[in-house]
Length: 116
Image (cartoon, rainbow, N blue to C red; front, side, top):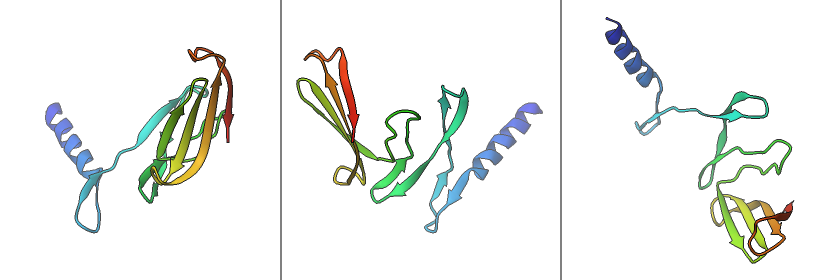
């Protein structure tokens, strides 16, 4: 009897978690969570629709605080790595640039990190 009740619950839960758009397409509603190691709590990950799709809301508390982005690229030189974050895909608007400078070509020690 318990197995039958569980099966009915799973089917009902699956049906409740579907949304249908104005074209009749069904999509499953999901929520993403991450563990906040600073506060030892579970946090819901949020995002927003962009011209090229969907971007996660991202930020690092007491850190670089990079705003929402849906694309990033990496350019590497001998002593530097440059991360470019964009919203709107590869041709979108730059929301942040992070330059990491190293003390030697083996990149084993970071000299500085600069966000602009």
